[in-house]
Amino acid sequence: MTEMKYEVPTSLDDAVALLADGKGNAKVLAGGTDVLVQMHMDLIEPDLIVDIKNISELRQITKEKDGYRFGAAVSGVELMDHEDFCQTWPGIMDGVSLIGSLQVKGRASVGGNVCNASPAADSVPAMIAAGATATIVGPKGKRDIPVEEIATGPGQTSLEDGEIVVSFFLPNSAPGTGGAYQRFTPRTEMDIAVVGVGISLTLGDDGVCSSAKVALGAVAATALIAEAAAAALVGTKVDKAALDNLAAAASAACKPIDDKRGTKEYRIKVAGVLARRVALIALERALGGKE
Amino acid sequence: MKKHHVSTTINGDEVDFLCETSETLLDVLRDHLHLTGAKEGCGTGDCGACSVTLDGVLVCSCLVLGVEAEGKEIETIEGMADGDELHPLQRKFVEHIALQCGICTPGLLISARSLLEKNPNPTEEEVRFGLAGNLCRCTGYQNIIEAVMDAAQEMRGA
Ligand SMILES: Cc1cc2nc3c(=O)[nH]c(=O)nc-3n(C[C@@H](O)[C@@H](O)[C@H](O)COP(=O)(O)OP(=O)(O)OC[C@H]3O[C@@H](n4cnc5c(N)ncnc54)[C@H](O)[C@@H]3O)c2cc1C
Ligand code: FES
Ligand code: FES
Image (cartoon, rainbow over all chains, first blue to last red; front, top):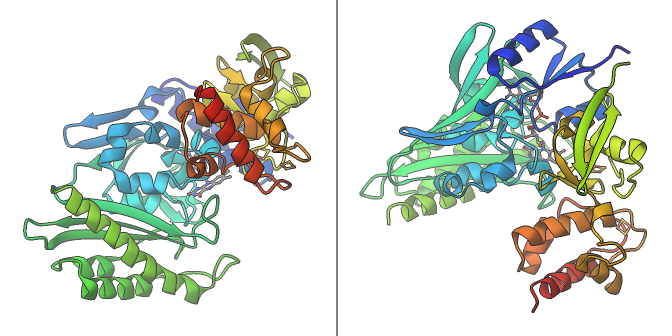
């Protein structure tokens, strides 16, 4: 066994340089709630661990003119303790607050949740529905991409060697917008989603839905954007007929697997049921925002 | 093999230790520092038996590397009682018979203290939610919840 090194850089440049030197068998460490479990189970054996928690850009939550930016290594508990963020982004917080126990959220970051690329990652559908983008740095410089472009399959990402997600940006939503995320699990706590649904919808002054985005988790190799499901809401008052169409379209979009948590048929059915529930929560929040 | 030299504060005392990268904070506490209150139930963040606080934040010490503790303040179960005087939570756990084998108890006490620091007057549901990361295979939880509610009331001076 070779010796495993540990570095804790304090700047992005240093982190990128360390990862470049690590030549592929370097592992980024944020909260470690996936990395340490994978090490414990001998699934990974990195030569170098690059702890990114001491880089300030990765730890800040800031309100900018056009939206909110938060560091990729900000922990779930840090987000939960940030009142204004929680009030502004209840849908994101629906997802974040479902990530494991309080102990797990004391460490787990959204950056890690996204980059671990589990199809069932609970923060991802709401982030996609809210139109979040990720700022990434690497040996070739800096780039911004939508969150849905990070995971490419279970445990696989589009990040190149040496790239780090620095922060996420959530653009200000239009007045009358509501977002929500719910998942279905056999247990109420500490379980992995069988299906997760994130929805963001915007109502015009007339109460008619002017735009919507629907993202489904755990029903395909990565979180899916269900365009037909969103289209079922646009132009409606999110009434029963629209919800029926949403549910049917959400079910139709699923490409699930069978596993011990649920069969394909079950996941497809639950996706529709859950989409309906999540749309109603998003609707309530959209209406609340108008008062 | 080159070891890391780590300086921390544990239960108010300055503590230095040596560890390898692969060792968790739980390994360090138990195997190097002989603070065996925190238990290893799973090693994967599921059971909460290894709960400690790190700069005041409740964490599973099995999911923290020993080297990550550099410059940090750690609180473990060993620091909970004040000499021979048990913490109210510890006393109420005894009074309510909130334990059987006791493996989960140190973690539950640390979680319960962390919960009451944030929320001194929790509802039963909030207590259950706050302790959801601590599994107990023996008690069925009811006595644990009652002990925490009772301790909370006493600590509020009610
Ligand atoms: C008991 C338990 C219960 C859990 N329950 C849930 C749950 O209900 N729902 C859920 O979604 N998840 C759950 N998880 C997993 C969840 O904790 C992780 O996915 C977490 O969000 C990952 O964040 P982290 O900061 O711990 O990442 P780490 O473990 O540090 O990293 C995760 C992966 O992402 C990479 N990475 C991290 N940050 C970056 C970055 N900024 N740039 C590039 N790569 C990066 C790492 O190299 C690694 O491959 C659970 C975990 C445990 C242990
Ligand atoms: S030993 Fe750490 S959570 Fe079980
Ligand atoms: S008392 Fe035995 S696990 Fe809780």
